[in-house]
Structures are given as structure tokens and as C-alpha cells.
Image 1 (cartoon, one colour):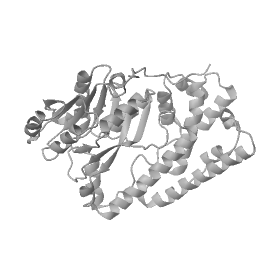
Image 2 (cartoon, helix red, strand yellow):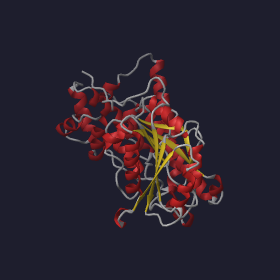
Image 3 (spheres, one colour):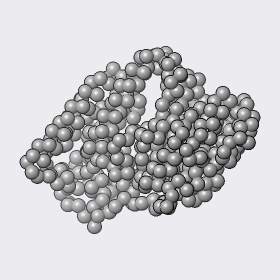
Image 4 (cartoon, helix red, strand yellow):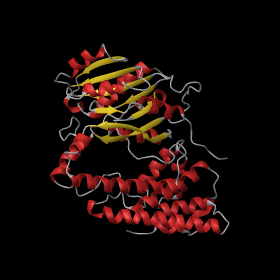
Length: 400
């Protein structure tokens, strides 16, 4: 019997996808210069939020005063909460976690949570597009973040060039993942960002996840990864956009401002830690596809599972135990962490051009192989792939 990914069972409003209660959670720390722009952008929405929860995290400036002055003229209910975290907890993870828990109380169990940053200006259709994506079946939706063009003009051209190469390789690796192991919940076109500047999630999914991890940096990615491990339907919608400041003195350690400032002084040795060599990305996506098939069908052929265990370098009984997890996301995360064939390697900035070229070559050869199969008039059964030695298996053995 085939096993389907478990649904979160989130209630949807079939009659009017925009009728759901939508609450925006915004952590803020000393944002007196930018909080007005953030609030006014939310006031110009094509579908207004029902409420905004502004969490003042250890603020020592006029952010609260400005927010209170604005509140009377805003077309939504503004909840202003002051909170003083202990020094060890005064970071982005704790602030966003608390802001979203408080916003969830306002939104109720059938509501939707949106979160952005206090230095961010959301597009006029930001709320509407988030609600439509969630109503279409997503449990969590991630938007794209662009740097304010005025701030971007102050950033050296070399940093823009480095970013362009990172983005190009990121998209190519995501295309590899898409052609090898497509996700029905996240069709093309899509992106790979998971930034706190633009995340939407149903309250039901948020509650099941246990909330945003209270970590000093990267809480946004960690939150989305946590949901993915529970087989939440994650959508990376390229039409949902926000503009963030490109300042070099930020409020959160390890954030975008720190990265810009550091790279203005000296180029990093390694590119973003999400990137990996193209052959590793191909291998990872191919293994994920095979593991997904083995997880979905507990009665898949004995020899197929034996071959998969051998290829992953994991003892068969251990692999079977991992495949027994109720969630594919959790099973894959465990397998990925324990297979000696799936280590995480980083890409040096100096190697980006070569990796971009190689990723393009892998995609081209994959397309050629698929076209050849179609011309021959037969479709290889993916479940038999670990007994065959077609193109995907050869690609997994390539070195860069």
C-alpha cells in the first residue's frame, strides 16, 4: 500500500480565500528611523491585515513613541508589546518567536500569521498574495527579499557581482532539485529564500511546529526547515516581494547587514552556506527522490531497498528504521545526516564560475538523457533505477 505524505489538515476558506484573519508579527529593536515606512506599507495593502503585533525587543530609542503616534491613523489594529529579554536571549530568534506566539493568540486557531522585519517595506499586495498562496494549499509560504535601491547603490559593484554569481548557482542547483525530485507543493517558478522578512504560515501549522526556534541567528530558515521535517507544504512564491534596507549596521547579529559590512571589507572565502558543488546537489536530489519512493511504498522490492542502503552507505536495518518515520521530511533529514555519501561541502567564491558551468552541463546532459528515453519510446521505471546504471546513477559518481 502506498503511503502519502501526511496532511497538516489545515482548514481552508473555500468561499473567500481572503476572509481568513491575518495578523502580522514584527519584532523591532531601535527602529525609530524605519518603523514609520514599515507601518505605512502595511496600511496601503490591497487586503489590509486584521491586526499587527509589534514586539519592541529591548528598545532604547523612540520606536515605541513613533508607533503609538501612528496607531490612531492606521487602518488596522496595532498591538504594541514591550519586552526586555535577558542579555543571553536578546536576539532575533527570541524576538520573532515571542512576536509570533503573541500574534497567534490574536489570530486564533483558524487564522494566518505573517511576519516581516521593522526595516522592511512590503509590496502593496503582500498580504493578499500570502493569503492566496496559503488558501491554494500551502502551510507556509516564503517571499522574496530585495534590497532598497538607494541602499543598494551604496554597495560596491564587486559585492553585487558576487551576489549575482551566488544567485545564479542557487537557481541552477534548485533547478536540478526540481527536475530530479519535483515537489507538487512548490512548483516552478520558485525560489530558495526563507527569510523572516517575508514568511506566511497558518496558525495551525505554526502551533504544530512548536514555533520559531529561539536561536541567535538563522531562526527563519530553521523554522521553515522544522516545518519541512513535518511534511508541511512549503511554497517559495516568487510573486511575494518585500524591500529591506541595505544598511551595514544592523540590529541582529549574523544578519544581512553583518554580511554586507564584512564583504565590503574583504570577500568571504566561501559563498552562502546553502550552496554546494553541483555534483553534490545532483547526488542529493537523486537520493532524495529514491528515498521518497522507498518511504512512500513500504512494500517496495527487497532488492531495491538493499541497493538503496548500499548506495547510501547505511546498514539496511538502520535504513529501514529511518524509513519507518511517519514524516518523509524527518526520515530524509535523518538519512541525509547519517549517509557518508551526503556530506555538506561549501563552495569557494573563486570556484563559483566553474560550478555554474558544471551545473549547466549537468542539466543539459540530464535533459539529453530524458529526450533519448522518450525517443526510444520507453519510460524507465524510477523504482528500478538502483538496478540500472543510467545517467542519474553515473552523475552521482562524478567528481568536481
